[in-house]
Length: 444
Image (cartoon, rainbow, N blue to C red; front, top):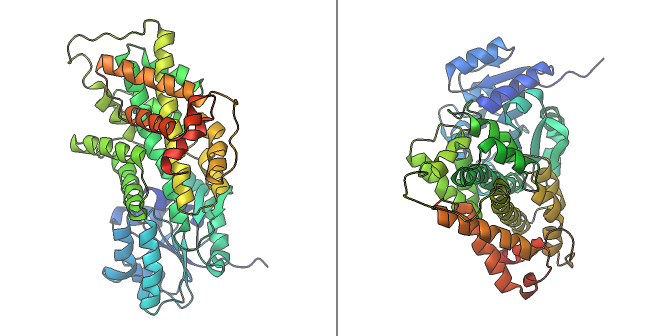
């Protein structure tokens, strides 16, 4: 006779949480859900779940709890500080999976707080997820899980039933390591979401047809998963459907830059992206799809007086756009891997996650392993692929053309500064050096 599955409590039934919880219901678990929004509870009940009116009621007599609220503040409320919180009602030895995207500092503080409150018996797993609502509902998420060996083994079956078998990452380093790994991936996500708008916006200023430009980009070594994913919505006049609101990636950039400041680590690319996101937020774009930020790049076209660039043919103009994007992707890859190195993460594991998830790009695929070599003090390969000097030249030509056209290229300008700094820090960068040499700017 098959072993019966344990009852599960699930706190937070938003876009991701609802899919995750209903996936568990479909897999034969009895799931009791809690959410502050009554219509969501009704939907979950219609999908076969049980519902509770408080976190405490949801977790009562359940040895496993999944928490998937939006922020650290919400997690603190439903678990400890709010009305009828979960913590006092969790059974002794319960396993708590915190799947929300929160700062490492928060989840490590939560582990300490559990002990101080006399609940050190709770097995806490730091398990942020990635993949979107559709993969949540299919049980094929990417999950980055950190915790004690005992906690991970106890909760492994649940992690497996919510994730793609190839995308469950058990991250060494205990509680906080999972959040750090998710954070480092989001460095790529934050930069490449905005780069999609910057690249296509620049193409518009150059006078390129956006469909022609985008197809050229997708077929080049400036391909990125985020560009391909956001493209249909960037080309839609109303940037619909809304798949990922600006406020979502802005939450991630806040985690990245705050944790970087706490660690004394520079994140010039992500910090630049964050400032541009703030500009979009100030224009009321917060609830809109993040692809709509192309408006920030195109709003000035035709309003700035006569301008004229040097590029004449469509091929020359497309090459400038590709040069801009390659420079951005290179610097965001270096910032990601250098930050992961600072966080003492397994760099091979980080690379595997990023290249197979939303942070993937052709540049990361080819240059990422070289940057990892630099982190490990190994000799870089010379003469393979495009040289660093050639990439910098292409990036500079793009930024100079954007200046002639009075077109904003926030990330491209920052990337050019960083690549020039790398050339000053590493004299060998002037020759046929590997593009990975740019990571020296981050102290590698």
